[in-house]
Image (cartoon, rainbow, N blue to C red):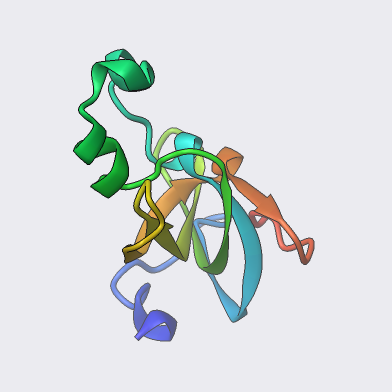
Length: 115
């Protein structure tokens, strides 16, 4: 599936626009940078206890797997990353695959965005 994702987006010109990463590369995802939330919710005391316990933990750095790079029209590189979010109490998890800005990814294998 991933290897065919760009078949309807041909590259034209001198600038790289996308690249599939084979095999997928290990990365760390800065979750707060990848999934920004409403600033007011930055105060944990303002959120009910059951929500803090059962809601998704959107902080810290977690391991992920980088599958592809794609360039946005403003020049920003986005990485297609697979990772797993946990709830505040750690009892539940949610598998996620999403496009994350390059600044939210910490490369482990030296596979940064294409030049």
